[in-house]
Amino acid sequence: MGRFNLPFLKKQKLSIGLDIGSHAVKICEMSETDSGLKIVSLGSSVMPPDSVRDGVLQEPAAVAKAISSLVRNLGVKGKKIAISISGYSVIVKKINLAVMTQAEMESHIQSEAEQYIPFDIEDVYLDFQDLKTNTGDENRTDVMLVAAKKEVVDEYLTMLDSVGLKTVIVDVDAFALENAYEANFSLDENVTLIDIGASKMNINVISSGTSILARDVVLGSRQITEQIQSAFDMSYEDAEALKIGQVEPGDRQERLEEIFVSACTQWSTEIKRALDFYFSNYPNQSIAKLILSGGGARINGLSRFFQQETGIAVEIFNPFSKASIDSSAIDPDYLAHIAPEMAICAGLATRPVAL
Image (cartoon, rainbow, N blue to C red; front, side, top):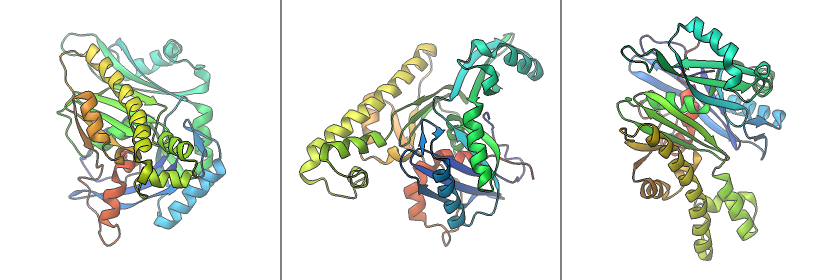
């Protein structure tokens, strides 16, 4: 696990990004060329409801089937994949420690981690990154600590092994999202990355090139679908079609707007809570913009709503803005449509692997 800055110093073999969400699995495969990244293949496949819940596999066979089908349909030949995890089984915490060597820090964290992690240390995988925030004569530095339950991670590894895939990287959603952003934009602005999936929202505040706060919130676009389903006594599929505008709302418009505003207000409250934490700790810093991704980012008017609520400019994230494609193999219109929800997957696909 852990965040990794892709060094574009020489061309390398990249991992295949596999994003296993609660609604769909997504695959992104890229290669490095002389002119930068090129998309080799990408796609998404919807899973049966509740196959994954709170980041934990509930129906491994159903997830394995969706992944196998997607791999086959996309013609993916590689086996080395990068995945990311989120939810209650993952703890991301920033701690402040005395400056020490990598080996000393590793030993210290292993022996002292129990004071930072609310799990039995024997039951988790630990990783960390020294953010090197010390300057001048300062002898303390911020460290990003990550712990993930072994049981949850091992279930993913076993499931993926069963379909012939070799997991070479296990990351965290927030840092995969950050890697996708770094691959496309410079870090000279402070930004907040917000990925709205089906059942969770990830918030990552990036300041001076460093993740200051990474938080998962158990709210997502599925709550809108379920509320529409309940309000109008319709199937989940019909409610989803109404949500994304495939069906005209007609006389449902007013009630529909109430549902959207209620959910988006909840999301906005969580975003403002994260921003308040940031501004209270860094009062002299600003946030240039909010960067939205995930399937929820496509909700009509959401960018404008967040901008009004926070007073901060909002952009929809295209994680492929600097990547090239073969337009005969990948439809540019399809790419433009799916790009926001591929952000985490794209970040995973920038990770180099050993040849």
